[in-house]
Amino acid sequence: MVEFLDEAAAIESTTVGVYRTAATVKGGRRFSFSAMVVVGDRNGRVGIGYGKANQVPPAIEKAQKEARRRMKPYPLVGRTIPHTVEGRYGACCVRLVPASPGTGVIAGAPVRAPLEMLGVQDCLTKSFGSANSKNLVKAVINGLEQLRSREMVQDLRRLELEESEVEEAIAHSAAFATGGPAAEPEAAEEIGTVPTGEDRPSPSPQAEAAPTVEPEPAPAPKPEAAAETTPSEEGKPTSESAPESETPPKPEEGGAG
Image 1 (tube, rainbow, N blue to C red):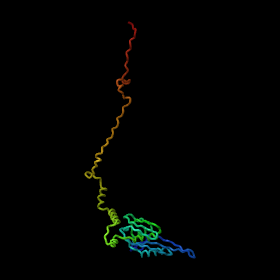
Image 2 (image 1 turned 90 degrees about the vertical axis):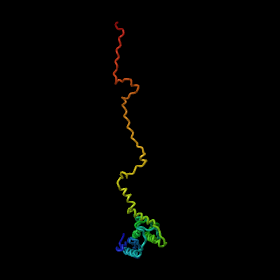
Image 3 (image 1 turned 60 degrees about the vertical axis):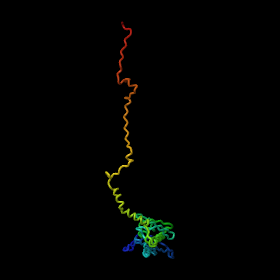
Image 4 (image 1 turned 30 degrees about the vertical axis):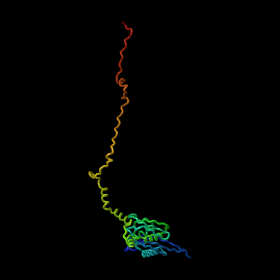
């Protein structure tokens, strides 16, 4: 939990952990408490403290006083670290990698506490070895002590250096977030109405050359089977079309003569 120690100086404190130990004596067991605290101003200064007492509140108070005495400034680039570092303490190893704006602090609770109190808002981390919270916090401080800004390196080497990849990424992200002049026309074209007249893009030659497919005509209905006649039956009258012809009666043979 974050606690304000000095509102005027904007110094905040967060407790990493409270630990209890027990000592067996003649009358039973005697408990004592210890606390690991991180103090910072979220503006480039951070310190850690460790205090012990018979009660929890005095232990946290001792740790806060020690952390304020041990506060030191560390270089930052925007809201991230200048370059990749690797801090070690005991069996713990913590790697800190700078990140572009908007990434956030990707870390566990022990590693996140000193980074947030320092003012880092974008950083990638990876821990190796032991997961002891006390040693992880100290490993992060060891890594922060290895940070060097571009100005510090220029003074040491007595030469001018170009912008680092981290600074270029921050500048690119800032231009993208604010929307530079090059991005405004594209956005206007996307939001504008459909072009008409001369502004309408001409169709491609492939679209013009593509043949149009006409729909096939519907087949004519077939006549009924009764109305169909074959060529051989054309000259033969049907019973329905022509009436039957009557044959004249034959004269009787042997008539009277």
